[in-house]
Length: 119
Image 1 (tube, helix red, strand yellow):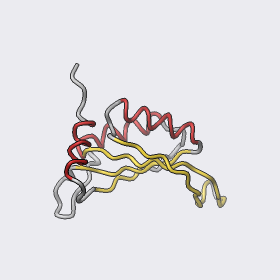
Image 2 (cartoon, one colour):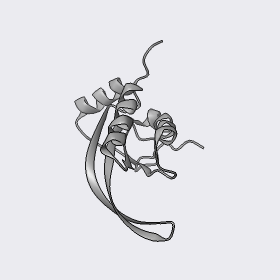
Image 3 (cartoon, one colour):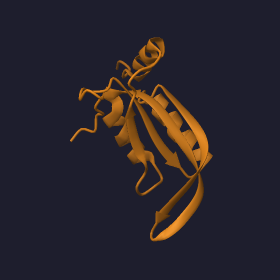
């Protein structure tokens, strides 16, 4: 079943903000480069964060690096597959939020950057 985001009116979102986290700056940079080079995301920002959660029954308090990926709605499923295939976590956080508005010039650029390259 496709994971394509739905907009507020029930239609498909044209653009999506995808968030994932990693355990090191190096792995975040590697994921970010891979996403951009594969044209699955137009831009990826890497931000240091602190995460609190429970894993294997124990409370955790860890530094992580969050990737904020801007992509087109049509590239969401391949992006998720790429992240899952290249991620170091057993169960990576991958959350997609529809972008309901923004600078039209920027969103056009997102479309251009996430259009698959011609063979």
